[in-house]
Image (cartoon, rainbow, N blue to C red; front, side):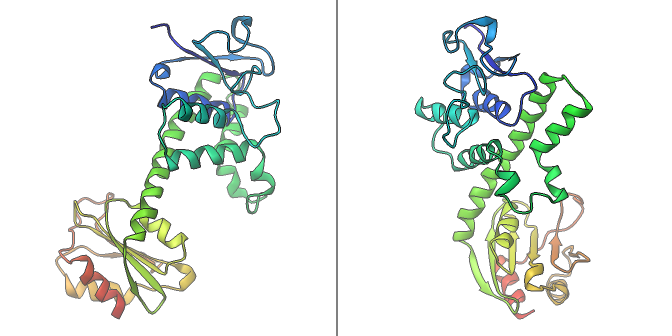
Amino acid sequence: MTQKIIVTHISPDFDGIPAIWLLKRFHPDFKTAKVAFVPVGEATYNNEPVDSNPNVFHVDTGGGKFDHHKTNDFTCGAKLVYEWLVAEGYSKEDLALERLVNIVTQIDHGWDHYKWCEPADDRNEFFIHNILVGWKIIDPHQNEKYVDWILHVLDAIYKMLQLKVRAEIELKEALNFKTRWGMGAAVFTQNDMVMDVAINCGLALVVRKDPKGGNIRITGSNNHKVDLTRAYQNLKAKDPAASWFLHASKVLLRNGSSRNPEMKASKLQLKEVVEILEKS
C-alpha cells in the first residue's frame, strides 16, 4: 500500500498537530503516515491541487476539505478531521475524544484569551498550546519534533479524558453518605480520576477502594473545610495492621501508594470505611 502523507503548515500549531494525531491514531491507513510541511496558506505538497491525491491529506492549510480558514463556522482543522473520521466509520461515538476536539477548537478560536477564566494568570503558561509556543522560541525550526512531542501529549490527555468520562459514570453509581462537612461518595474502582471529579463537582469527601490491591484513598475538599485527623485516628484504631498516611493538608488520607509499594492495604470494606467517616 502506498504510504499516506499528512501535510500541515511549517511551524505547526495546536490545530494542525491534533489533526495529525487524529489521523494517525484512529485511521489504520495513517498509522505510519509521513508528515510533511508547506508554507501556510494555499501552498500544497509537490504543488499538486489540494485533495487531488487520495494518499495526501492537507490539514489546517492548503485550502482543502480539512482547512477551515475560508469559513466563519466554529470549527478547525482537527474538528473537520474528527467529523470526517466519524462519518467514514473510523471513529465510533466517543465522548472523551469529542471533548478533546472541542477544547482544541476553543483554543484555535482564542477562547483561552477571552472566554476561559483568568486569562492573564501565570498558570495559563502551563497549558500545552502555550508550552508549544515557548518550545518554538527555545528550539526553532524543529517541525518534526513539535509534532512528535504533541502526539505523545495528546495520547496522555485522551487517556485522562477517558478516565474522567468513566469516573463521571461511576460517581452516579457511588455509595453516597453524609458527613459533618457535607455529602460524600464512596466508589469501588481502580479509576483514581473519581477523586478529582468528585471534589471538582462539589462533594465534601470521596473514598476510593481499589478492587485489585485493596488500597483505600480518601480526599476531602478544602472548600468544605474538611479535616481528616479524627478519621485517620479512627481508621488506625480499626485496622492497625494497615498503613495509613495523613497528609499535612489534612484533606488527603491514604492507605497505600504507587510511590511506596511496601505500604499494607486495609482489610476494611468500603461500607466500614464510610461508617467511620460518617462518625468522624
